[in-house]
Amino acid sequence: MSDAPTADLRVTAALTVPAAELSWRFSRSSGPGGQGVNTTDSRVELIWDIASSHVLSESQRSRLLERLDARLVNGVVTVVASEHRAHLHNREAARARLADLLAQALAPPPRKRRATRPTRGSKERRLGAKKRRADVKRMRRRPTD
Image (cartoon, rainbow, N blue to C red; front, side, top):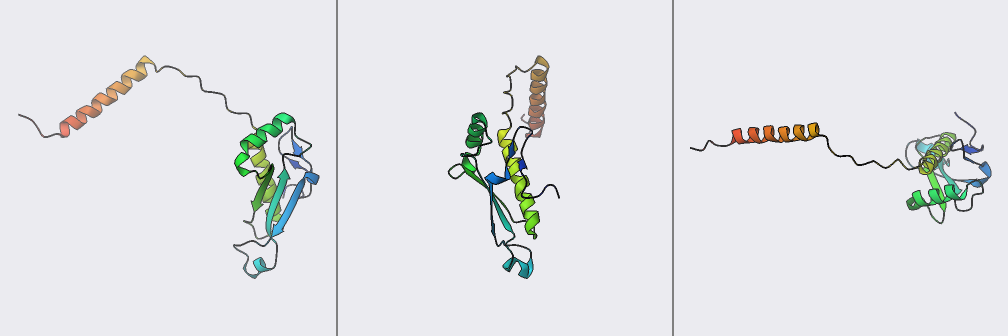
């Protein structure tokens, strides 16, 4: 087990979400657990309000709001974990899932690919392969007299 579920959530070296900004919601989950599922609130929802967070810079906030737009409801991101039978394991899974989601959204975009022309050798190899393929297909045809 990593850190306690009530501790601050470290996303990257530059961003740590304080535990006070995270809110939890618990409910009964479906799936494995037998009779225990009917009595324990093992499903976990971890909620963080990106729009009103005090730890984000404006550039971080705009990047998160833009990249997580499909997952947000009024600037709030929600992560759900219910794959474990234990409540504590689901809390840790939700924390890890939120940290991964935020880290991926905050990552800088990949560098643009610089377009290059095909080399003479690659053109010749491509045309040679096409010619060999055409010869194979021509040999499969019925002979013409």
